[in-house]
Image 1: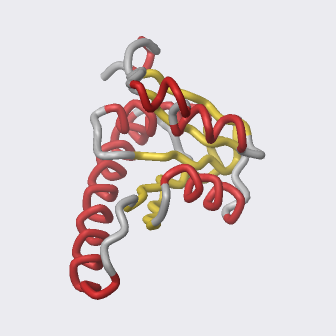
Image 2: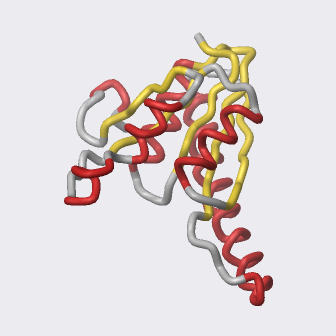
Image 3: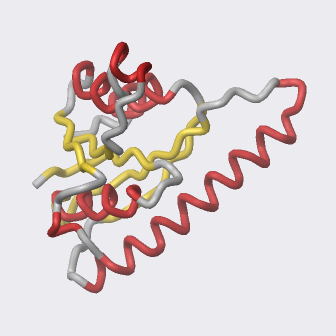
Amino acid sequence: MFHRVLVSLDSTPLSAKVLAAALRVADPDGEVIALRIQAEATPLTNSAAVRTELDIIDAETHEVLRRATAAAAALGQTASVRAEVRSGPVEGTILEAATDLEVDLIVMGTHGRKGLTEQVTGSVTERVAARAAASVFVVKAAGYPFLQD
């Protein structure tokens, strides 16, 4: 089991599986940190729009956490869960958060898409796994039948 687990969440349905996986591998006395990233930089001249966008991401993240922690509690999983919302490039922000928060494990999802860009550069998940100091647990969109709702 891992004491401090960082979970990278996005706005897709895969996030529920990723969070469920993190809760299952977290130490009962540990902590799960759900990270959402606002990746697109909004011009600083419109700071109200930046704040509104971050507020929306924060509200979505807390809703995902509410559902996941209720399901985890029903299964007797007791790790504490909190949200962290940051802004910046996805890969770098995940790596920075993992270092700042001194996590033991990073849990990420992969949709398995392989467009031209991903074929050339690799996916964010692959790049984070290659560069992270912590272990990385990758949850696939298809598969992991024990994580199905």
